[in-house]
Image (cartoon, rainbow, N blue to C red; front, side):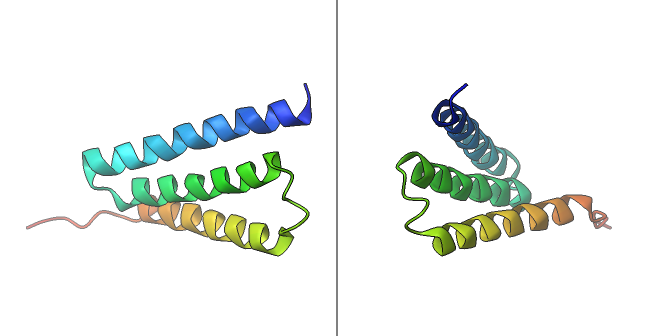
Length: 88
């Protein structure tokens, strides 16, 4: 499989996860879903840069975007793992 096709499939799944994250937020008002949707939107943007062969022109910017995306995902997982507050 060519690297371009692999990246295109990756972009498709990033887009699907972006939509799923926003959909989860709209259904449950869960901030974690919103954060995951935003993270995968950033991953999609990086993948578009790669497909357009702009990866070598903006390496620091793309590394920054990926770092922000991974940070959003990490925070979403932490939010999901913390205990829920009970209502009295």
